Image (cartoon, rainbow, N blue to C red; front, side, top):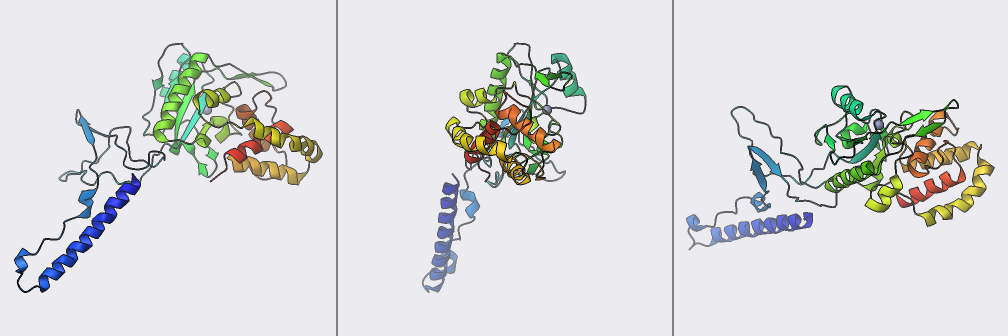
Length: 341
Ligand SMILES: [Zn+2]
């Protein structure tokens, strides 16, 4: 569509130039009175396709896309158009919308509440935290909306992924009712399962959001991915692979690529495990994939927690925070499949 706009713009420009030349030529013909000269074409902006704005009960909506629907920068709006009403003046939409714009919603972040249903609702609506949506665990077909998608909800906190920080600004947050984990005397965590009903709800909701805002697979993440030193949710029981396989949501590695990396990983991990330069390589790979981690060259607490967060998401059978050969092979396969732009 952009191309079309460009072509329309270009042809208008050419037409304007031709008109001016004609006027000039006419001016030099003695027999042509000046008063009969063709008026210059008024304005090229009039050629822009007219937006289809609908008005329901005095509220305006705009859902036509004038830009690239495959990108996050299209011009459709999924809510009412919010406009100023300056006293004594009229805001008009003669030139609405400019095509240079994008959605604020560029990430989808999944959480568990670590609370039962009733307490989840109270905390997420009456206190200092919130999410756009809450998926209950009551077996019905309802999903609760708590915050307008156009506004920020307070779900991510201090967070980072690739070049972005403070992801409340740029994300939609979904909270899933789940009691989280219990820890034994050694600190080993056991996580609660999600019901199939909940996973179907989350998948349908996530799919709808990802399609409307064209959120890339690399930006569909766990809270623990964007805040690995602070958060565990939605934890290793959340079925990321099922979401990828059955709903084409989020990221997953290709098994063949993992196997390719595994042979070398099985040799080098035991050999170089305590070599600072190898730890640096691992930390660089985690950082390249998206995690915010310092390149310390040490197996420090932040690095271990980041590896644990990675395992919750991509190797949930064992989430001990230790970079073993399989974890290293999966990380490399993912970096190959989803390179940072
Ligand atoms: Zn969370």
